[in-house]
Every structure is written in structure tokens, then in C-alpha cells.
Length: 94
Image: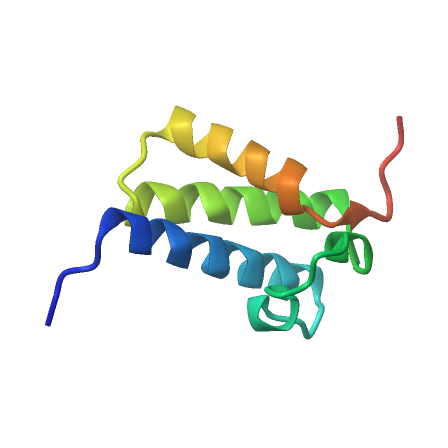
């Protein structure tokens, strides 16, 4: 059995982190449901700011453990995840 490459681990991380976002936000949606969509699918569902913070904390821990990232890099990656794929907030106040 071949070892998992770094690229395969990164691809799996995207799937796992998106799936966990939907779980934390309470939506019965998975990466499989949205992977082929070319539209702004992430605007179809929402999460609270607290759920987003929980997701980011989960993602940082995941990236540190599975991709051996240091804390600062994992935080930066999750910030990008949130910008790129994060759901809209229902309770964000400027």
C-alpha cells in the first residue's frame, strides 16, 4: 500500500474541513454535495460567528496534526479557508 502524498493529504484536508464546517453549522450537506458546483454554493447556507470560531479552532488543530503545520501557518490557512469557502454569518454585526 502506497504512502499518502502531501498533495493527497492537502486534498483530504479540504474535504474534511468543509465537511466539518457543515457539521458545526448544523447543515446536512457534505463536500460530495457541493464539489462539482461552479456557483457561489457557500452563500446557500449560514453559520453563526460562534460556529465559525469553533470551525476555525477545529481546522487549526486538524492542520497542525495532519499536515504538521505550525500554529501560525495553520491559523493563516484557516483564515484563507474562511475567506474562500466560509459560510455567511447570520449574526455578524459591524
